[in-house]
Length: 143
Image (cartoon, rainbow, N blue to C red):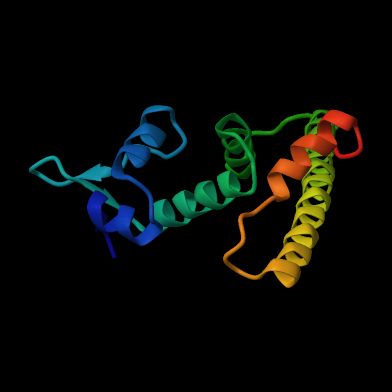
């Protein structure tokens, strides 16, 4: 089944301009066109675009995605080079996880302060959590 750009963008939940951009930079091959010039995408194109969409959602940039796609197409890199690139990406992800965990810890502290304030003063009270947090930050006790 062949899809036109509007159908494809709705199916994937991406802007048609994004698909045009991917075509321009070579992430997807030039699609076949109707006699009137409309682009038609086949199932392989849909799968490729879905992979790109997922890879972006996982934090890969377009250059990294392009490399992976070229490897899938049989273009090879030396194993050591692939290993190094994957290692760097895993380290970046681990750093992001650590940063997110630290941020989560700060949010949990704020949540506990809110719970305490709500249980003491009720739902209509002014929220003092951020005021206390700013004060604590100045004193160095909360980062």
